[in-house]
Amino acid sequence: MTPDSNILSSEAGRRGEDVRSDCWVRLAPTDSGGIELDLKSKVESMYGESIRAQVADELAALGVGNAKVEIEDAGALPFVLMARVECAVRRLGVDVGDGYVPDFAVGTEYGTERERFRRSRLYLPGNEPKFMLNAGLHGPDGVILDLEDSVAASEKDAARLVVRNALRSVDFKGAERMVRINQGEMGLEDLDYIVLHNVHVVVIPKVESPEQVQQIDARIQDIQGAAGFSLRESATTNDSETPEQPIYLMPIVESALGVIRAYEIATSSPNICAITIGLEDYTADIGTERTDYGRESFWARSQVVNAARAAGVQPIDSVFSDVSDMGALRESVLEAKGLGFDGKGCIHPRQIAVVHEAFAPTKSELEKARRIVAAFEEAQKKGLAAVSLGSKMIDPPVVKRAQRVVRLAWTTRMVQ
Image: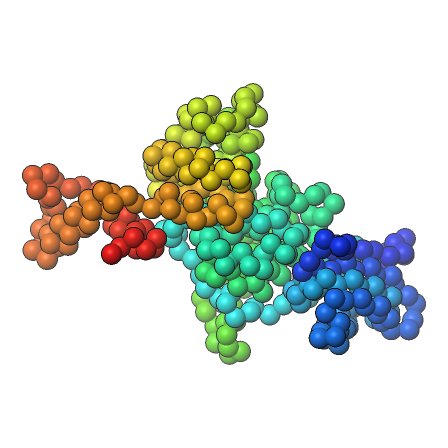
């Protein structure tokens, strides 16, 4: 593996006084002399030798034998350092294949389910590892490692590597691991960096046709098939294996055309678990301003809810962009709940608790649900096909919803 002779050096990562949990790397190939490393690290006294050994191992694995390397380290964890070094090597034009990835860490081995709660999903910029490290401690139902709008065009390549390594290394405390890919061909290329690396849900932006979803789904299956990826090594043992689960899909509709085609999109793949709406782009597309009141998007959100319910997937509402107004956020969540949404996006950790509290069943909702569930269980004991509550017959969908309300109440610790 040899670098492009026209590229004298390359850089990757971030440095400066305000940088934390990250590092900056400059790599300049040489004709001989091995690896010459100039390291400046805030944790030199504790981890200097470990960092040097890690860099040497990675460069050897990537096929770089002679180079001058400068690193300014602001406390980057190994998965970040690995991503930054690999990015610098790739930017030299070196073909490093699949790269040099971390082992699966303890705490990353959990799976997900199609019907799990998705009340909150916390967006995290894909090129900012500092936001990933403690994201799980805030208790979101899901984290979205974002490769799209929150990442500058010049850093898309770097974000892919950070996200790939984070999926294998960061314990998100049970939160569903989601990745929002880019649009078009770039999004298809993003899949090469995440499909084999512990992602639960691929979030597809700006969907306007079923074909966009099907193209992503087919690419995922091609990648898995080419890797023979029906099993993977367990994160906790060296010799056991655990079955792979499906990678679910969550399309985002963000335009008038996408909203009109919401049902076609929601039914375009059996791997879709939810469909959501992006209101910033949608309101721009229809030529209006987004407001907290939301009258301008009422029809679109109702369309998405009905399309999702008809398709048997979860409807998820847009993000609330004012991170300082918790009262307005709560009202927005209550409105979303009233429209039939199951969840809402979060752009700051402080929004998560408000979202969970507002989506939680009220006391009257919980009491009613408990009565329905009790009546259903009593009918089952008696071998009755029909379920009644007082003088009213209870249809199966009502029972299913009541069971969900009780589970949700338990999750939010409302059950006494």
